[in-house]
Length: 327
Ligand code: SF4
Image (cartoon, rainbow, N blue to C red; front, side):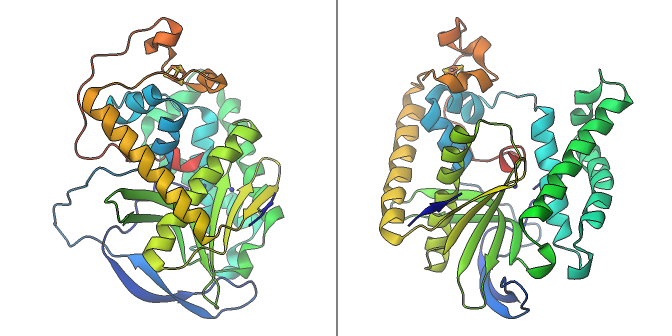
């Protein structure tokens, strides 16, 4: 195991039930193939009942502060995204779209060309995001797009996308542990080598302080490692984070005993969530991360009063938002 020192967008991919398909491999400079297991679409018109599940973002919330988890997952209180969060979603969308292009088109100039039309597409899907720029003159949005361009350019400093074919981008994964805990999440990018080795890739564009961001990111990556291990019977060879702001990478190699322990951690977190869910006893846990919390006005630690507990939600308190998936 070892640490050596990267997320899109709102594309909802194929979900539930799994099938084997043959897809391009990941090895740089090769075009060989690998067999992979990817989700099938739900049958046309089928009513899908989503069982409560644990996602990396919500598990991380509960660990940080049970009351924050409640506000987000149970009360589902709205949060106004920041420009940085929306920019993260935009950059993730561009990188996802980039890999749908032929290899010889995966170049910086082409990626830059994708930015503005992708922003138009996103802002049509979520017109409320354009309100972030309501008080700016036209330069504000333009400068914001320039900063997104810089992140996309920085990506090309970390790897050459024309030399690899991911098995999937923005992959929805879901698995049930032996204990019955359902894990669910979205993986930015999944690479599978011709030899079958799995690499999980996550893009990071957020502005969280590095230390905090990294600990949270590695929790998220181990979560994906457990899900993939349980789905495919293979421990991912590498968990790779690509930090686009400063062009740094963090690579980690998990092993099976570690994932067994991490699975127990996830089960313990879910049991704690269920216990709190039955009673509504989600306690605040103040930390320096409170500075980034949108709910201080409702938090007793800051003199606020939480809304009346609405009861345990159905069907799914574990769902992640597009912004969760593009930090
Ligand atoms: S302000 Fe801090 S303690 Fe209060 S809900 Fe938010 S994260 Fe928790």
